Image (cartoon, rainbow, N blue to C red; front, side, top):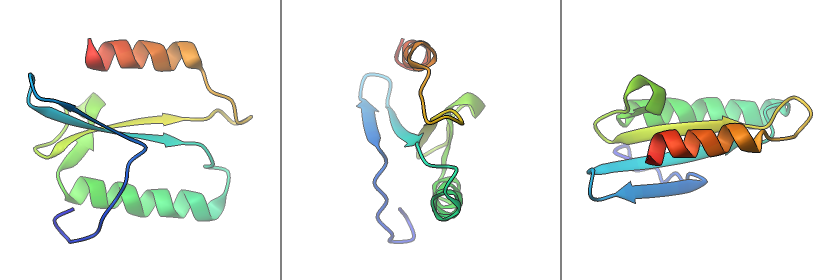
Length: 89
């Protein structure tokens, strides 16, 4: 990041043809207060670095895609599949 910190998203997808970089974070432990606080700090750093949410059109440094476990710790694979199709077309 511009501030010198290194952040590792769960996935990084570079689409050279479209000239975009996608940073994908999957939030699996939001029920853990410490995890949730780390995520808030990481999100703030992404936003300050110009990496904005994909659903808002992304930012000059990339688009952030966020998926989450549900309250029982499961994932909706159909929803994630649809998101992948929407994003990567």
